[in-house]
Length: 413
Ligand SMILES: *Cc1c(COP(=O)(O)O)cnc(C)c1O
Image (cartoon, rainbow, N blue to C red; front, side, top):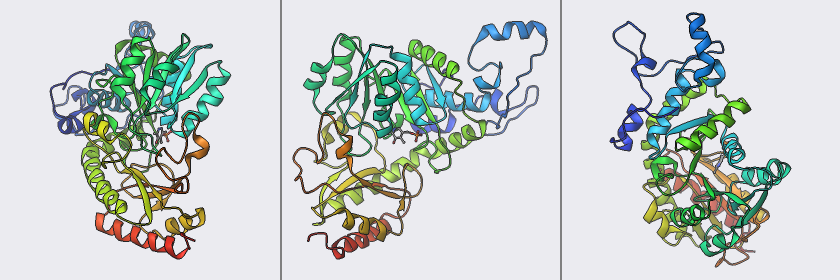
């Protein structure tokens, strides 16, 4: 779906108003409307007569009834809302998951024989996609250090067609210099894809910072309630048309029920992100002062990799960050996580509830290593937290108990 209006409004206002077109919240000929677009469950779309039926297949336009795979007003409303929230976007495609969005965007821009550059801190399934699907297609992937601009420049060759950035990386949280990397890529004709799941368009207006395609897992902040899976890709007119063609040919469609849940999540996303960011920063500062912790990898925290770029380029954060223990063992870290009562153990993040998972990225590195430069090799047992909407003091008390369990497990032995 492409955008209709609202460019001049602030993000908080757009979150409330976006996607609520009268024709999606009302009934033709009836005065009045409801607040939210209805859940339009639809496979068959009906044509009023044969003239409309003959015209229908030729239109291939967003926001027109055609057939269920192209969505109906619930999905159109969500896509339009996301476009209105993404400065510089002409349109947004929806996908059944964030991974589906990344895959569809990559195969839209890559052809056999091309080289893809991928940031070395990329989400693990993105790496797996490079080694599997893309390799099978004849696309070669090369990884680069997310913080090394000169190495990125040097890695571009005649066959480089696209780059996948992720800032900050969702395990190790290095913040990339997207404007600098994009400028280099653009000068060489390389398309810039950015996995913007961490910050969302609210915290990082990706297209205005240089990305060509802004990708999000809506499963995280937009859904916000750990009850749906979805992805999106937003882009300018030309790339959006190409994304739409790929998505339609792959048969991608999202359910109207999930789209309605995502729209509901979107309305409170700004509040949730602000609260989670403030809570995460307080918890990161508390962890940083603890002797059991050697490093806190949190973009909002001075000293974290890329913090200066975060301060320069980002308009907000979120609740996802990692910390690394001072020496210790994997068993002691298990004891720490098991002792937490307010943090669930599970993948995903961005929900209203807090989560904790172990971080062991050594095997996921090609161009860089873990522990990160400047870290003691013994300091390698990480924990990733997704801070939810619980009271910050309660979460800190819970983590205090976790650190006690870590000490009791003989972490320093
Ligand atoms: C979760 C996640 C994805 C994938 O999203 P799904 O909706 O789970 O498929 C992509 N990128 C990042 C950074 C993520 O955290």
